[in-house]
Length: 204
Image (cartoon, rainbow, N blue to C red; front, side, top):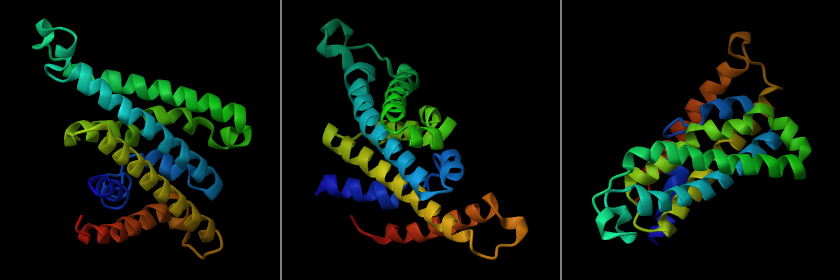
């Protein structure tokens, strides 16, 4: 039940877009069509699902104060937590590079559609935010971390596909010229964020 609670909370209550506004650059730029949004959302989910558990293991067995005691009792007082950001970003960059190569090989059309925003997943603050939230919340095992990572990815995926579907319909709507494009997207994002706030009433 604890795993399910973390999973659901990560999707709806602690949504990366609507609760923390992380990853907004890709969210706004790529969400013009559902197809490209779905591709980027799946890629972000996959990267989160790999990097957050890997960074959890790195944090637990290398970076936390006393984490190196398993190597030698003399290292029990070593604290490498100051290296967290550097190592987290390095892991994220490596995984994103692998994802980019795989998409380029097996889906060239999606690779061309995503363009520069695919390698920019490496600096997507939602990805790094997932690892930092994991570290801050102190999950007790890798199962909880994996549920959190998967839920966060799916939440981001739902957000970008949802706004893309709405933006496709907006092409046929009479929108004031001053609000066309990013303007109306910001307004709808705010409304979607308010809608997702209703999930805060769920007791988990």
